[in-house]
Image (cartoon, rainbow, N blue to C red; front, side):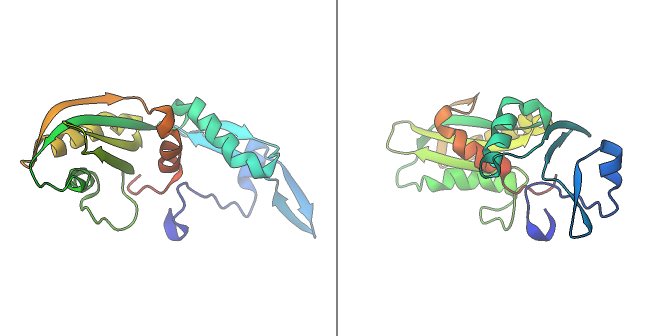
Length: 189
């Protein structure tokens, strides 16, 4: 978010107001008061979880991701999958299917910057019918609307025909991709 393009909000508290209100750990070094290293998971307007102390620090990101995966309701953001079987027209560029979804979700297939609903599309055009899937990230409250947008993009095209369309959970083989999208930048939050 902002100039650093971080996928989360940062909090500045130079007067340690929040440290006092939430009894957060601080220490003094070189005559300067500093926060101890900690991670607060905030969702739904409240602190959902606190990681403190941070040890070992080189594995902390994985610990936070594991906790978020195990507690998706804590942040209200999740990863979802829509998949479809498509009959593609002769000589058709299969990449256009993913481009149609990107236009629907982000406004343009060459969108600049972060998209409101980060996603990844893949198509196996060697199959008949072709198998297409979009893995996307959205607030739980937006997920049904995003699914509808993807369905609209897929059903409104004339270069292919939708044979079947369904939603499913993220597969284990897709978990690393989902984690990457979940922790990446999003616009319009």
